[in-house]
Image (cartoon, rainbow, N blue to C red; front, top):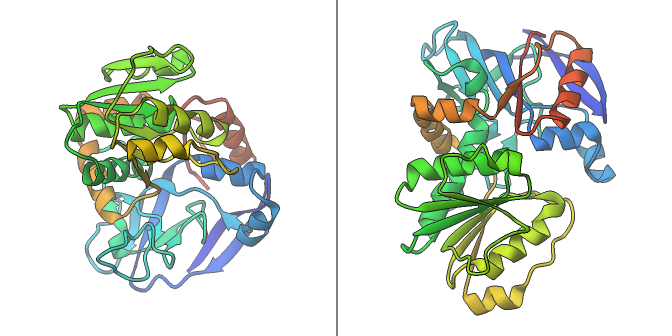
Length: 337
């Protein structure tokens, strides 16, 4: 079966590859809605080390996608059924290592072509039905599952004193963390610290928001998520170390291309636990889909989505990546290629 794959060949340059795909034993899905991730944007803009770009490209971008089933010979899915697809492809099972951290796992749009294709052939266990969830919201299920995974890791590692949990950052990652935390740990007081008052105004469902440059001197919290990333990682991590209570757990989620210096002396004095959290696995996806079936979660997630015009050409692909640079949270679009 011939497939059209839209690959990024070099920063801001796409080409179309024709693939002869063996769909035997696979679920064939037609992508319908996609969302742009910061990782996609870094590849598109060329904001990665040249050595990494030369190893990764050419490659189709996008790992956040919802679609509809075209064919499934296993009989598990019906033609036309709405689904979300798990971009993480594990090669083995471990009782100790999550599939999203296994070095042998393949991640679509990082170590293999992502979802910018005419159709996607997926293993049956990497496809999850999302009936009842609007496709434009379902396409950020992968993103929401990352938040679910991170919250689960905090729950697994953190001690039981969870009166106040802080989230450092005011972007889309901080927002979905707050949304998942509100559902999964409702007894905790959630505070969000950011730099942009307009973004912070979207966090109306948390207990308190602060601007990072005007924090109260007596601020304290039990545990924290770092969702700043980039150049903001240094300040975010060290401020968390300063304000967190002893023996708290810090979940690091923000990606930085540069090494970040942290106050190890104070980290050790307080006996902190630092947990790195990235991506997600099948269980996280399943839980995310279940949560997204509730109207409250869909409404919250919908409030950070900006839907751009449909993509029907390569020129349109360039347009949505440009649009995303000026979108405060998530950019989604209807895929018609």
